[in-house]
Length: 301
Image (cartoon, rainbow, N blue to C red; front, side, top):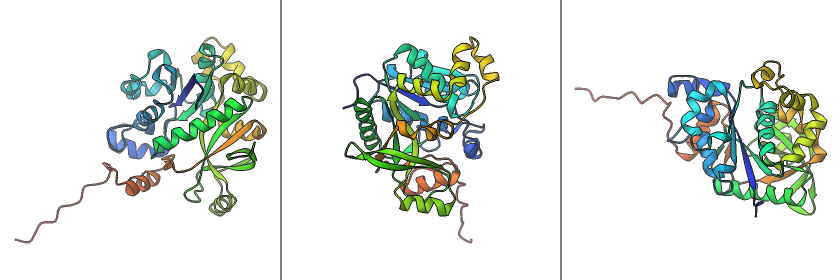
C-alpha cells in the first residue's frame, strides 16, 4: 500500500533539445518532447498523468512547466487544477525545476510524501510502474529519513544514461538497496562493465517526504533554496539563478541518504534521441508518423 496522502510532482519544464528536429517535423514548430504527440493521440506528459492517476488523483498532482511552453502545453495542462500548475520563468535545469514545485507543495502539504515523475520518459507497462512506485513509497514509510530512487534494470549497455550502483540489500529486502555510487553517461566499455556489475539506470523517479528533501537541500544547496525563498519576484530570482543538475549536483553527493528500488519489466526509455524513439516504436509496432511515406511503384504500361 502507498501512503494515504501521496502527492506527485510532474517535471515538465525541459526543452528536449535533442528531439527537437523530430518534434518540429511532426508539429511544424519546435515542441518540447513531453508535450508532442509523437506516436498515437497521447503525449508523454499525458501518458505520465494517465499512469499516475490510479495512485495519485489530479488534486494532489502538481506539474512544473516553463513559461515559454504554455501556449503549446496549455490544453494538456487543463487536466490539472490551475493552482497545481507551477510556472517557472525559464528552464534552469533539473535542480531548480524540482526545487520550485517542491517549495510550492511543501507550503500546501508540509507532511506530504511525494513521488517525482519526469514527464519525458516512455514506460510500456504502466501497471508494473505503479507496483514499483508503491514499493518505493512503502520503503519511505518505513525509513522516512531516506529518499527512494527507482533504478531500472538495463536492457542494454547504454552509454547515454546515468547509472546507480546498488550497495547492500536494505533491511533484508532484495529489491531495495543502499546506494554505492552514481556514474553519469559512461563510455560504452564502462557501461558494459557497469551492467555486468549489476548497476541500474537512474530513472529520476523518486519518492520521499517533502520536509526531508527540503532539509537535505538546505544543508547541501543552501544558497539555491535561499535564492528561491528569499527573492519575492520569481522572474528576478530566475534571472540570476545558476542552473544545476539534481542528480549530478545533489543526489550523487548524498548516497548515504538514499535507497535504491530495483525496477524491472517496465519497458522504460528516456526517449532522449530519435534513435531511442525508433527502437521503441519498432519493437512495439507503434505508429511512426514522422517516417516518409513509401514512394509508390506503378506497373509498366
